[in-house]
Length: 245
View 1 (cartoon, helix red, strand yellow):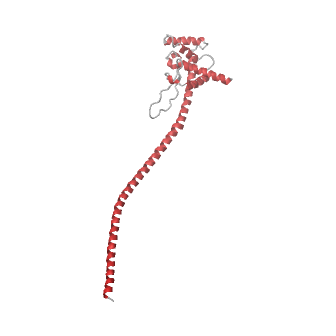
View 2: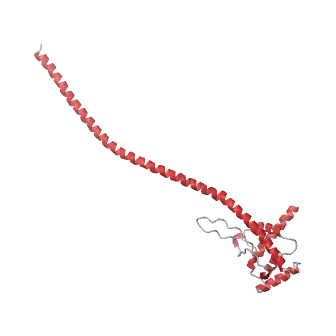
View 3: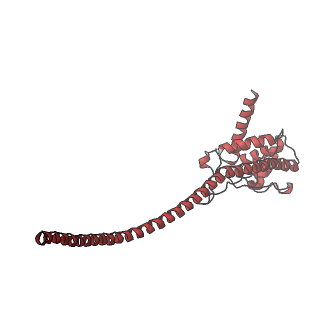
């Protein structure tokens, strides 16, 4: 039951976070990230632009070489994640989160920025929050510290993912490029061998004709010479029968 209560609390906290900086909580595909700030101003500068209330941005993944990094959008799974991070950093009683919520609720009223901050400050104190503005700034910085620590941890997971996924693909890419270069050299060598063979084939064609001609001529000479010998012997045999009895 305790786990269900914690899960339900985080879910509610996540919905609050989403509603705080996104009006009517549209779907992630319809939402773009608000402007982001890396630090909270000191106490004297609390009444500054509400962009200071936006959470620190996560580390942007390495952009593919083929184009720029994609534009970020609010993702409910990360809202739930940051709800968990901020919930762990949340202290009992009203703090910066409640001030942030009060300020957001005043955003639709026709009030100037300083009036919104003053009204939110009065509402925060009415909730039982500390009347010391330094305590409010301290709690805001506590949330920022938790988010920055989470950002660093996320950056490490991004690096690990890049090393595992992109690094593995890069190694495969290099291996295939090396294999292609070797195959290209083999193809070039085979082409040279084919060219040499074709040259030799052309020579052999001429040599065949020449050798065939020589053999045919030699055969003709043989037959002609043989005919002379046979003819001589036959004449001698004829003369022997005629002259010698």
